[in-house]
Image (tube, rainbow, N blue to C red; front, top):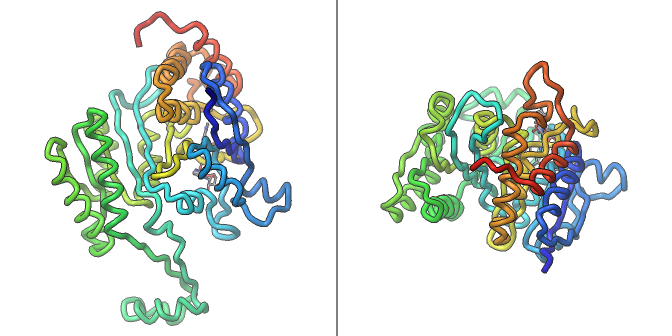
Length: 366
Ligand code: NAI
């Protein structure tokens, strides 16, 4: 039986790392049929399509319920809104799960980091509720805040709104606690800035605390976002499961990736009730696109998560093991990981090394 997967290679380094990942997945022997789609800025430029996220892409994901996606570029400060955010909202992919752990062979300042970050994916400042001075909506908002910010009456200004609901806060917390309970994780930290954003983050925190009471076997604590940043840089191995709202989760994901070797090795999944989209944490890395320099590890490890989701645990173990074998051997490291003075390998050569390791796994116990 073949699994039917929506495949969105994305842009920038997306097509290269997708090619590498598909090569590895197909070498596991698991059957796949790829429902392949283009989306994003590059797709619009090439085809003149009016929409960076065509409805047929969403239809395919809804039908197949699983997608593997490369990164998509978002224009900064202009143009269309993020396709990634739009996809997460359209499919209600409410939980962004990003595991970060040290693998042997990946250079890092730390050892024994093994944490899983859950980011609420549908609300917060990513809701796209924004107003600029001179526009209609801004008038109302301006009236509300003018008393606090007199300069607004004179200057060009803008407002972004941070909606947080009890429903979504409970839902992400519950997902994280359930995950902890079913995956032998013992500690959950809720991250917030409730002392400043007393209503929005206050609600997020209150909802998460209520959920925590339903899981007496899991140790629970909460920490402000600034405190966890410092804590993670000093003692990341003390942390286990982290739960955050959207913006803090986005920022802390990159920090956590940095603890275990960088964005090139940080996988992820966007999880909803009806569909899951697997994608690396990183973006389209335009400065190295098209040069066979990108590290495909993050996307290959995202595909390992996908294999587990599909119930293909043996193939997932084999593929993850093959990646570990290649990294540990140290002679097939991409430019982001290769030590100074050594010759890095390209994206496709890394994938070929993983395929070779799949075919003849290392006898060393992993
Ligand atoms: P980025 O993650 O693309 O790059 C940050 C740094 O990490 C760069 O130095 C880049 O070269 C490096 N890097 C990233 N992935 C790598 C890999 N696999 N191998 C080796 N080096 C890698 O973040 P940036 O530059 O902020 O964003 C570029 C574009 O990507 C933007 O348009 C942004 O909106 C988009 N983006 C898309 C995401 C998605 O599709 N889920 C997530 C994050 C950003």
